Amino acid sequence: MHIDKTLPKKILAWYDNSKRKLPWRVGKKSPKKLYYRLLSEFMLQQTQVKTVIPYFNKFTKKFKTIKALSKSNEREILKMWEGLGYYRRARNLLACSKILVQNYKSRLPRSIIEIKKLPGIGDYTANALLGLVYNEPRIAVDGNVRRVFSRNLNIEENKINFDKFIKKNKKKFFITKRNDDFIEALMEFGALICKPKDPNCLTCCLNKTCKYFKSSKKIKNIKNKMSKSKNYDIFCYINTKKQIALTKNNQISFLKDFNIPEIKETNNVSNNQNWIFLKNYKNSISNLKLNINLYYKFSKKIPRTFNWYSLKENKEFIPSFTKRIFRQVSTLF
Ligand code: SF4
Image (cartoon, rainbow, N blue to C red; front, side, top):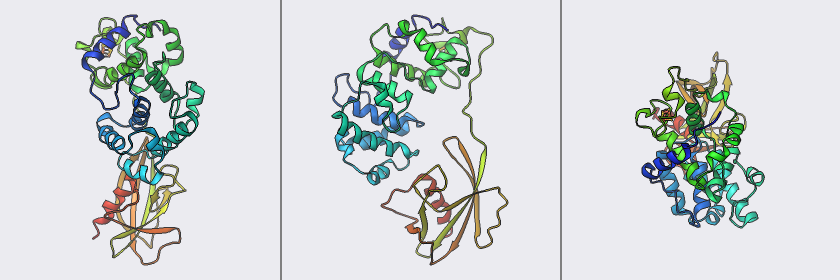
């Protein structure tokens, strides 16, 4: 599995002419480099660039440095993260910033083993940070990068051992010494040119050597596997003050520790006699598909572990999953 030796230079030339202006792409010597990269890498996990930009700007306006971020607290960070989803990232980001400030003088450790000990940082992010911050010769293999290489070779992604592939092609990949730019360029190229659907092959700078483009038997895209749909019943205590009772979720692994109404996984033959059925709807979280039956009842009393929350405005952070329930329940008033 060998790449064409001209690939890095071609992709870098394309990147120099066509890259987007993104707020986390600061100069190579900028003191903000680590903070901006860390923040953007956390935010970009499972989220599109255009969604991330306003959140990134909001965070960097409020917290100018990683040190300032580390002095914040979970409540504040979650509130600012509201709407971006996958809230575990926000908690990990805060924890990460505290460790970097306290243990590493606000710098990124040089060892990949140390970096991977940081909360929420796996192989991909560790490689990306080492490459982007220290210009180390590394490839951060995300979905875009997997697709670009898999198409170039016209071999399905799941048949490529990317670690071995990178080691084998090391000399060709890191020929330019612009390792930081190459990481960015590969991801950008996958996002803008070698897209999941309808890649721009006719105008692509790699089409002369790309096996996918030349082949009459092209590989197919690997679709993200969604897990099977699960059924949940959700029970909402509400009152005439337009409030809803929420409790800290410790039963369902997604949204752990976040405020939600009572929720139970069911086999969809529920018999919830004391509750009034409001609506059935579908929701998806990460690769989980949820089939939700929503119930409610007006009540003055609520179980001890619940608290009342306004259906309109809350100072507390409310996850989007719960906000959607708010919108359904609000139709009753
Ligand atoms: S020629 Fe097409 S498939 Fe090949 S790298 Fe370019 S965009 Fe991707």
